Length: 527
Image (cartoon, rainbow, N blue to C red; front, side, top):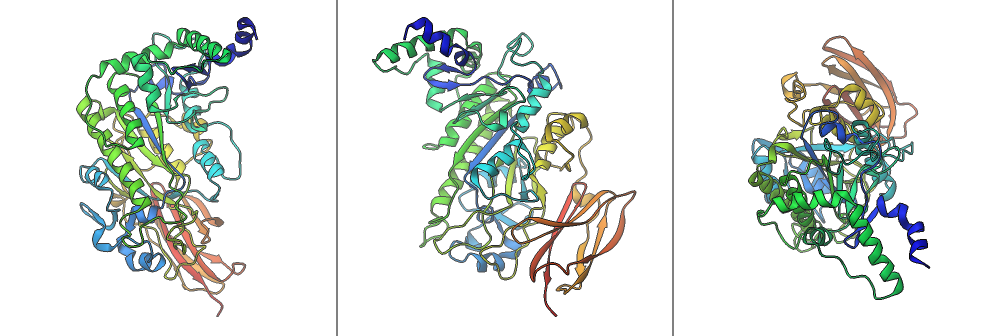
């Protein structure tokens, strides 16, 4: 094939995406919402770093429920963390961290970490690929959306991207993903809103002007030529190199640790003044079906190594941001496509489950624990899941509203519907912060009789506003919504729930009211 014909075929793929320094680079997509964040839309210099824990993280061994330790131990005695080894949290006695997570313990005790309990959604999906798409698209599990939540946000903030970009107002990439090809998370309505750096070595090749050698073949010669053209036309490469060059010293990161390698690059770019607003990194696999722990010492093993690397990497990243003088502007959040079952399996592992805890971290995180430790059945079966307290899109809503200052219209566009906002982030620059649950009065949720045969009365307290009661089965699915109502003022109320059609067994009642969520267990029996 002649070079002219080769370029004619490949040119559209060279510009967006392009090949730079031997790895794939995709520039952020067409209509971008982070552009408003960077000066063209919402005025803020805030940055969000998303940490994906690939494979489905076991939340019960990461955040150990000390207030229900006997139920926890009975459900998974072959992998349970010894109570005496659990890392304690200052001022909080209901739960603690896996012993390997000393870095996260330190961040919590410094007030830079919020642990959000039992995050999930109404009808969980247990396929890795589908569940990941649900989290990245912020869709219902029963609908298919081919855009990502950060992609929609960036598109909202930077309309018409990439036309006219980069420019004097926004010369930098809107979003950057390190460690893989740009994911659905960054996908906008027309084009991906982020660029990807396929691995850390590629980043350093770019910064140092090193190009991976092409193979000594005719195709290799064409590849070398395409790379040259790509480098000449890829304007973002220059701003990335310039930002990296401004940082000549960083703190030491743990090694070998691929997550730390990725976060070190992110810190360098932020510290170098790059105005990119969303970064995404990934690490895993957390798919621990077998040998999750060492049988001779459950504190050690595969899962412990994974959690230690996550904890050490995030702690090093946070310390580096502080040393670089930019920690005030950076917020981080972790997510995994799902959690694991309450009961362990016979292979010293755990199978795909529903809700799990996640971390919100940073200087402006509201430190503490959001929500209660998951309600565990007295005798767990292999099918029992953690019932969700908080919809994962409430985490997104809280970050968008209180970190990126998104208004109600933006939230509807990005998240497709309304979700409760939680006190996770210092939103003083956007609006008055959300009042934490402890200052608005304790919510009451109970049912009687319990156990019940047909009818049970659900009694609850609402602090006013939108109030929702859902019934979940042990797989984590919402199977009934006996109440959804707006109350004009705080009130005690009760409803009668008819469970005649339910099978015998354990169920969960979930109350959601403003930033408050509670889950209680109820049992149907045959009298």
